[in-house]
Amino acid sequence: NPKSEIYIDQSAIYPSIEKVLEIIHECGGVAFLAHLYVYSESVAENLDNIVEKYDLDGIETYYTLFSHEQIEYLKEYK
Image (tube, rainbow, N blue to C red; front, top):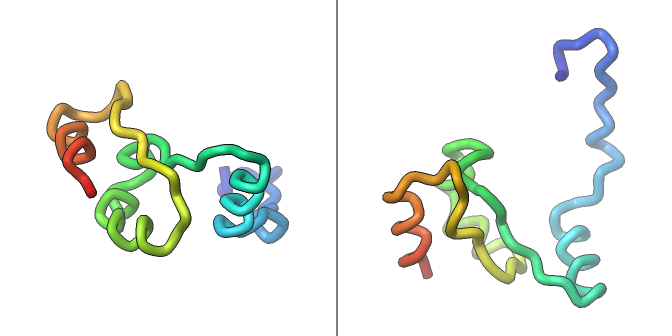
């Protein structure tokens, strides 16, 4: 919680998304964008840009908090 008096912002030491994806693939893993509607509306709204920019292997389509319409959209997404 950034508003907490004991909060320490460590985001500067986090690897970039590109680096994380590189590590996942080097280890033989697959990288999926998970529960995108849970993060924020901007993630879903920018899905085309995200897919273009990052070397993802897939997008999670079914999640308990997704609406039927969201699931259908992701099933048809290409």
